Length: 464
Ligand SMILES: Cc1cc2nc3c(=O)[nH]c(=O)nc-3n(C[C@H](O)[C@H](O)[C@H](O)COP(=O)(O)OP(=O)(O)OC[C@H]3O[C@@H](n4cnc5c(N)ncnc54)[C@H](O)[C@@H]3O)c2cc1C
Image (cartoon, rainbow, N blue to C red):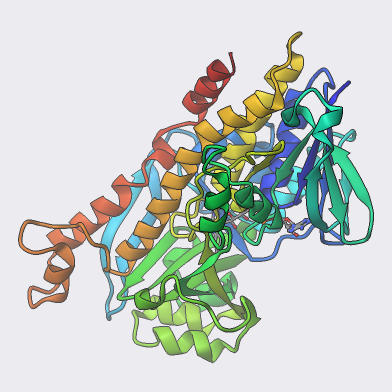
């Protein structure tokens, strides 16, 4: 009998897993259902950056040729030729000054989220069933007494519309507000059976996202308008990070260059971990965005003064989880459900793609074998490989936010800390900015200098 996989959530994580399984399950040993709350599959938010490490995975699934048709003219296919990949500037002054220009042979590429989703949907195998308007309310493991052991007991899923479904492995790809995460954490995963009752209490609340103290304004600008006002505005062709005290903007072209997407972040570091009072997402007048950046360099002012459809998002993240898998049922977490992080390395979706890549390979290898591995053992390998990796990126993303905002600790130059020196009378000598640029880049190199192949091979060898 095929292994039945229920994927809850049709975001980038859930869809990538489905596409990966479409590619790898050549013998049809897996049966895949996607359950999505929304009545249709749409991606909110505008742009998304894909790093070479993630790109190489998408390449293996045959997605990149179509994605490339959505590129802006200044962006280049990863062809090994060294090019300006992105620029960091200190922009909270007039004129701004460069922090670091990064030349890479394989650049990050930026897309509209809807373009990525459209390509993923096109590559889903027709055998994968997609159930829309299916909002999971809870899951339960079927009566273990009817099965050899609890780890092979099927999972019963209940939906808000009263329907139910059954699967052998439930994948919680239900995003940052994941309800499945709450149940997985309550199962006391990551601790021994003896510790579980107290751990469940201790972990109460750990499953909930917390406010990062940062808000983000997501906006677009018409490229033609921008080019008219400042021909050669660098964001028409290049990914630019404009940094300043407690604020930064990330901007890049999308939709074949017709639009510049930018996200403007405003942080209050003292509020990290406190409760956000207000809607997580709200349309706001352009003046609200302008009010934060009106003293910045001219090219930033041009962006905010021409911002279209600004919306304000309260940036939440979860605390790193002790486990991505349930201790009591065949249920695991993937994507933001497992590791919702701040967006400062632009890599949350990249991590979801890596989760999907590793998990799909494990499932396909087991399914193709004459002696399939128990689902619980596949889950353990997935957790052992993906959790440390994703949680490292989770931490690095937070640190990057601090670096962009000149708030990072631990950048000591031996004279009392980098921050103190930067804010002090010494001002901003180029070597200090250079050191900041180097620190930003060094923690990020994995995204363009490494691939996920080592992790994949390690995971497969752990499966035995
Ligand atoms: C401002 C900002 C900028 C970002 N920029 C980047 C970037 O440049 N690069 C990058 O890699 N990442 C970026 N990210 C992170 C990225 O957006 C997320 O990590 C990624 O979208 C997570 O995908 P997901 O599939 O795990 O979750 P989601 O995309 O949130 O999908 C979850 C899906 O589950 C569905 N769902 C939820 N609950 C249920 C339920 N109970 N039953 C059924 N379905 C349910 C939802 O409707 C949704 O479709 C950014 C994030 C932010 C906030």
